[in-house]
Amino acid sequence: MYKEKYFDELRKEFNDEDEIVTEIVNLEAILNLPKGTEYFVSDIHGEYDGLNHILKTGAGIISEKINLRFPDMDTNDKNELNFIIAYPKYALEKMQLKLQDDELITWYFTMISRLIEVMQYCASKYSRSKVRKSLPKKYAYIIEELLYVEGNPKNKQKYYEQIISKVIELNRAQDLIQSLARTIQKLVIDHIHIVGDVFDRGRKSNEVLELLENTHSLDFQWGNHDVLWLGGFAGSQACIATLFRIATRYGYIFDLERQYGINLRSLFTFADQHYDADPYFYPKTGNFTQKDLDLLSKVHQALIVIQFKLESQIIKRQPDFDMDDRLFLDQVQTGKVQINGKSYPLEHAAFQTVDPEHPDQLTGEEQSVIQSLSYSFRHSPKIKVHMNFVLKKGSMYLIYNNNLLYHGCVPLTEDGDFDSFKYQNKSYEGKDLLNFFEKHIRAAVNKRGSSENNDTDLMWYCWIGKKSPLFGRTAMTTFERYFISDKETHKEGDNPYFKLRDRLSTAYYILNKFGLDEHTSYIINGHTPVKAGKGESPIKGGGQIIVIDGGLSKAYQKATGIAGYTLINNSYGFQIVTHMPFKGIDDLYESKAQSTSLKRIIDRDLPRRNIADTTIGTELKGQIDDLKYLLETDESGD
Ligand SMILES: O=P(O)(O)OC[C@H]1O[C@](O)(COP(=O)(O)O)[C@@H](O)[C@@H]1O
Ligand SMILES: [Mn+2]
Image 1 (cartoon, rainbow, N blue to C red):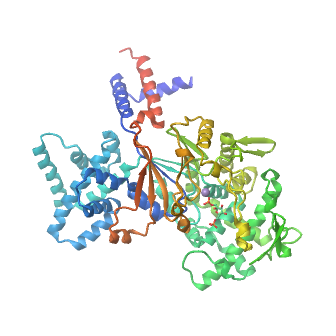
Image 2: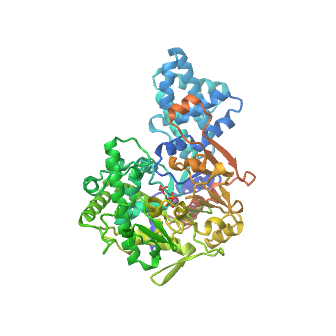
C-alpha cells in the first residue's frame, strides 16, 4: 500500500516514458564515475581558523592536483596558485598593490586560465550536472563555456581567450577569480565526516558549526564533548556546569556570552561574593585585565564546586554508573581525600559552600546560578539551531562505504571481548551498547525540559563514564588535577580497547560484529591525540584502524608535535594528511609555504572505486530499480 503510493508519487515526477529512460541512463552513467572524495576530521575543539584553512586548501588535495596538472610549473607559481585558490580575496588585494595596471591585466589572464585548468582537472570525475550545481549562478554560463570548449583547437583557443579578455575588460576579473577559487574548494571534497569533538577548549565552536552547516554533504559521529553540549541542551545541569567550567579554564566564557547571548550575571555576582581570587585558577589562555583575571578565577572555583555537587547527586541516584569512588565532597572538610587507600592533602581547596551534613546539596544561590545558566543556554536561538544540527547529522557511530566510524572506542575487556554496561538489570555491549546510548541521547533531546532524568544522566555518563564508548577511560580525574599535586593521581586509565587496537585481530573482531567485511573495511577513530613527535603512528590494528585526532586543539599541539592527522578517501583509497600548526594567512603568504599538509598513501594499488561500490551507489541502484519497475508497470500502455 505504502509502496504503491510511493510509486504513484514517483511517476508524477516524469512526463513520459522517455524521461524515465533518460533518468535511468543518467543514473547508470553516474554509477560508473569514480567515487567522490571523502574527508575525515575529528577533535576540532572550537579551532575554526585551523579547520577553515584545511577545508580551503582541500586538505592538501588542491596542491596535489596542481602538481599533477602542471608538473613542469615553477614551484613559486604553484604555491601562488595554491594560495589564490585558498585565499583569493587576500591574494587579489596584495596583487593590486604590487602590480601596474597593464601587468595586472596579464596576471588576471594567466590566473583565470590556470584556475580553469585546475577546475577542469578537478571536475573531470563528476557528471556535468553535478559540476553545474556547484557553480555560482552569475558565472555558471561563462565557466561552463570555458570548461567545455569544443570544436577545432585553433578556434577554440581564440574563443576561450576572447571570453577571458571580455571578463577582464568588463571589470569582472576579480569576481570571477574568487568564484573559480571557491568552486574548486567545493569540488575537491565531496563529503565530510566529522569524527567527533567539535566543542570545548577553543573559543570558536559557533563559527565551526556555521561552517559545517554550510557544507553541502556531511555527517557527524558524536564525541564526548559534543554529548556534553547536547546533554546541557537536553537539561543536564551537570553538563552545563562542566562546559562553562571548561570555558572559564580556557578563557572563552565571555565569548560564549557574546556568541550565544548567555546571561552570566548571577554566576559572576555569586562568584565575586563567595570566592577569593587565586592565580591558580586563572584561565590557561587569553588576554585579560587583572580585574578580569581575578573575577574569572572566582568564577572558575564557583563552577568547579557546582559541577562536583551536581555530579555527586547523579552518582548517588544512579548506582549502575558504579562511580562511588568519585564521591570526594564527603571528605573535603578534613582537608584530605583517600584514593586507593592512600591519603592526599588538598591544595587550593575552596569548599566553603559545601555543607558537611549535605555535601552535594547546592546552596540556594548556587541553584539559581545553575538554573539561570541552564535556562540561558537551552533558550539561546543559536544553541537551538546548532544542537538540532548536531543531533540530526550525528550518531554514535556510522557505517559509510563499508567503513566503521566512531569517536572513542567500543569498550573491550582485557581478553578482547566486548565489555558490557549494566543498566536497570539489562546488559549492553558492542553495537547494542552504542545503539543503547544513541536511543537515550535522542530521547533526552527530543523531550528536553528543565529537569534532569535518566536520559540526561546517561548523557552525562557518555561524557565521563568508564564504560562510555565516547570516553573510554577509567575515570576523569578532574578533581585530582585541580586539588592534588601528586601527578600519579591525575592519570586516567585507558579502556583495554586502546591497547588492543594495535592488533589486527581486534579490528577483525569489531568489524565482523558490526557486519562488515574485515578484509576490505576500515575503522576510523578519533579522540586520542597521536603523538607523532614521539613516533606514534596513526595507523593501527594491523593497518585496519586509522586514528585521526585532527589535533587542531592548540593546547594539545605540544603533546602531538604536529597539528594532527586527518584522512582522505578517494577512488584510489585512503591517504593520511599530516597537518602543521596553522599560524594565520599573513604567515602563510609571507613564508610562501607549499602547503601545510603532507600525505602518505595507504593503499594505492587497489582497483579504482566507482560510485557503484559506495553507500550512495547502493541508493542510486535502488532508484534505478524503482524506475525500471515504473517502466514495467507503466499504466499509459504506450
Ligand atoms: O586538559 P583539559 O582540557 O583540562 O581536559 C582533560 C580532560 O579532557 C579529557 O581528555 C577528555 O577530553 P578529550 O575527549 O578531548 O580527550 C579527559 O580525559 C581529561 O580529564
Ligand atoms: Mn574525545
